[in-house]
Length: 475
Ligand code: NDP
Image (cartoon, rainbow, N blue to C red; front, side, top):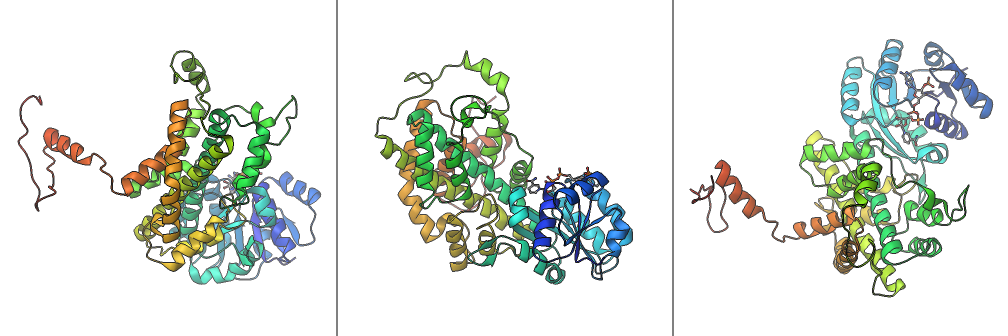
């Protein structure tokens, strides 16, 4: 049978994307290294447009030129292994898409290698997990712009739709799509961490019960914080436990996993010299959360604040406190997105991608984990000013930051006095204060550098580079 596209790798994501494409009328060839997986998919999800193949040769032969394949296999070596098997079967002009969470440098390398043979390689970020893949993900394609036109009808058909527009748009050449996906995930880490810190504040400093938390987050989900993550958080607080009395959330170990895209974002930011401190803080928070034994032991010996056993009831009314947390969270969220988009901006210059930030925010509006109302405002900001250097400086966001920064400071002090760790919100405030030109102490650091290493210094009152013969007592 003839097919329109071949999906290689039929685990959760590949299977869901294949069925999504099949639903949209495309004839999809499905192939998986282990035959049993293909059989299970065909048995459990039979679809007239999904055709199983048991060899790559047959899968390749089922298509007319230019042929199109999408790999949905484990990131890393498996991608290279599939490419090695597939490459001899492909011809010039064929298109090979990697839809997994590959590292963008790998995508750049693979793109270059396959281009030698005239094969168009695409690194495509797919966000939204299993449900997104099945019913409409946010899709970030990177690769050859001309070749994109060949696969666009399929990718745009299966993508989520926001206000009728597909959440899929050409990002740029080679690694651009995977880069945008990586930063998306980094922002997702920061966003989740901010929500977790808001929860801790409301629960431990505000004395909110799970029921009240569910109500509060539901309320937030009707305003400017409206988003997928706030919505599922509201639902989580109402979820009954499967084994015991009470809510499931209280029975889950205080330790969170990570697969590495947040870490990639953080490492990449250091390489680019861009401050994404909130994403890094969110990665560190997960690392700390994993030190369960050490944390349990240290709890017995390290003192907390005097006020209460690690917590302090807020002196204000619950509703007033919740408003402060909501406003502080909103201010911090703006900073997190500003940092993420700043990284994208630097990468765009560094790698020559010419990323369109408004379009990126627009494709995040549906299908992906960070989908939110707020992204419309980001799109508007970049459309209004394509040269915007930092999201915080857009009039709309500047106004929000200026209005809400006091609330951020007030909940931060409350959290710190209560012994509640707030790494991401603290970074938001520190970033804001440094960015708005408050002294950051670098004059002293430069003096130290000149003192111990003759690294020289510049002056505020005259041009040039100076070195000072520092006085006594420095040996
Ligand atoms: P997995 O990442 O668990 O990968 C399993 C698939 O990879 C199977 O089809 C497996 O085949 C195949 N595979 C592994 N090693 C090889 C190899 N050496 N040669 C050929 N095939 C191999 O599957 P997921 O569906 O979870 O994810 C697919 C990709 O999508 C990953 O890159 C993931 O990071 C990304 N992703 C996942 C999301 C999710 O929510 N799960 C969300 C967004 C992206 P076999 O059955 O033979 O072992």
